[in-house]
Image (cartoon, rainbow, N blue to C red; front, side, top):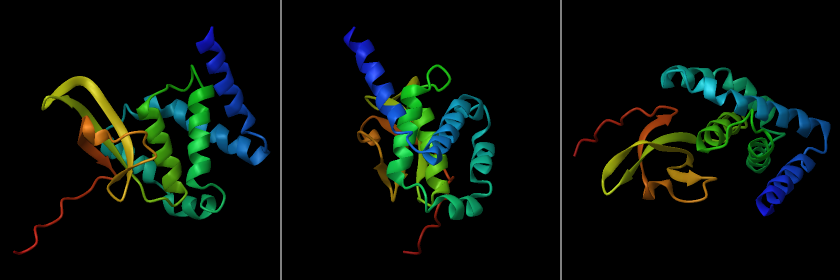
Length: 165
């Protein structure tokens, strides 16, 4: 009973954040994108990257003034709390949705995909994805480097040439 009440309270708090029509429309866009994440993740990662980065320059100008990182985080967390069963919970939905909207707001973040490892061995079917800013986990509850090995990054980083030494 207590867990049901806690879930309902979280949903109510999330819905109360949609007070203004502008915030409501933005939250609806966030929820629709979050619901589409399972379909998007069926694409090859380079194709997904091109799709996510498309027309980012014009989007940055349009959205950078109205929604900061805190507002975007609240909208994504609300979509995850209220959107079930259409919005799947988890790091993949959270990470990809935050990445998409933060990049459009002009925040320079990367999205890391990693595999969990235990005793130096990669675990099958166990992964995590998280945001980074300037090489550090961003908007993450813990440090994913404690239990994950990075495998892929969006935007894909090119290896830097070795400096002559």
